[in-house]
Image (cartoon, rainbow, N blue to C red; front, side):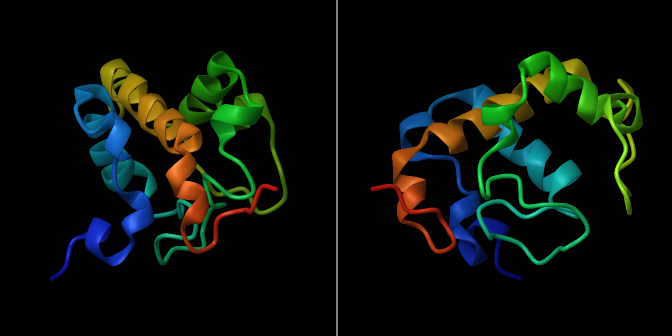
Length: 124
């Protein structure tokens, strides 16, 4: 079976962050915890939750505290019709893994090369 990164290259750790252990761990956390329900820049097959990069990354429109709160307990932040996301407790997603996940999402949002991948928004 091919790897997720091979099938969807837009999931890979950006080259400029490839030596950052936190970003690499965040990639793994994303695949373990988020990927079953979310896509990233069109990469993935799930349609349960929104794409976490399109039209923009949640790291670009939420504060870090807001993003952490949403991941921990989405209903405490806001509710919406058809909401299916459950919260991730400290035991399900330790703080160090949440830190790494946010580092990965930031690295993906900040990576200019990702803008050339299929499904990426075009900036003029």
